[in-house]
Amino acid sequence: MFCEIEGINIHYERVGQGRPVLILHGWGADIEAVRPIMNCMSGLGYEAVAIDFPGFGQTSEPPEPWGVPEYAALTRKFIEAVGLRGCDLICHSFGGRVTILLASEDPKLFHRLVLVDAAGIRPPRTFGYYVRTYSYKLGKRLATVRWIDTLLHLSEKQKNAGSADYRALKSDLMRATLSRVVNLDLTERLDHIQNETLLVWGDQDTATPLARAQVMEKRIPKAGLAVLEGAGHFSYVDKYAQFCAVMKAFFA
Image (cartoon, rainbow, N blue to C red):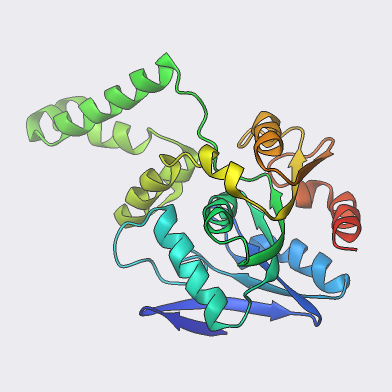
């Protein structure tokens, strides 16, 4: 089904019956990626509601490069439009950025929160980061000079630079969006989250390492941390049975 918000047709699904729980997927993913969470929660007697963020799944791209605030604003409008205010929420990875911003601004928008391998804390930037960044930017500028580009094949090298998430994007608009998203550090927002919050993390997560979950646990006043041993960034897939057991206990 679809819900039009400011000219964007938001694709979403509702599965099960009971108290609603909104599920937000990660970057480069869609509803199918969080299907295991939907199945888990509907099996526990909840109505699982999941959306495709703009630029992913069956939802069209935003009209211009967005950052986390724009994704958060659209999510808030979706919640109001379909009557989900006060619902529980489960988010994964990038969905955590949206959740942190929304929950810190409006504690009554959600009831309880579950952040699974969530993004939102920007790690300290090392010297190597700046070397890579400025080398990339220099290559980009040189590649605009045709003869230098031809001689050094800089355009092709530039395409192969950057993160896997960046390289996977086919749209310049979404590449610009990713740059805006990852450069926003939401650490200071954590102190303002008043909701009861559960952090679920894979101890083998390399995309959002466990150390970031420990920071979140310290900063969010009502937070607890459940670590799934042997699980990676998609801990709810790697350890599905344990994940569902944790959900059952938290939402009891």
